[in-house]
Image (cartoon, rainbow, N blue to C red):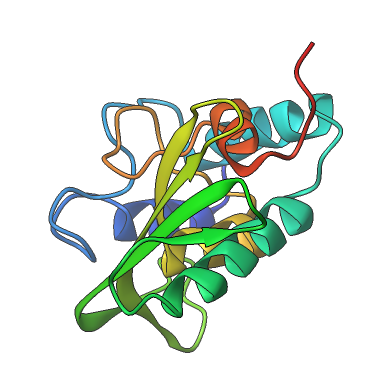
Length: 155
């Protein structure tokens, strides 16, 4: 699909060195619109919404913060650790506000799935349906993320 000029500017914000050292696109050669549409289709195939995914991420992050850098058990099946770093990051979609540099590590003890995400990931998923490009250090494959977050039952 043809991409707007606005999305071209946003995609430039995601290149290495613009906001983050490694960027948010990885080795993905698709345009931003196509990346978002593919992940949107996968989220809907799973019977989820970006809002529900982000809500679970936020809930686990918030509960994990209580551990002050130590692992805490959440909902009796998740081990969650939140580590903070100095600084804040802006949204590449040019929204106002800055997002804390923190890393949330989640282990779903029920199925062994793990994930790591940031406050900016939560925002980009909820607000833009963006899970980052293939090969990006913080790429969150929707199916793997949903499994780690315990958002669907496995057969």
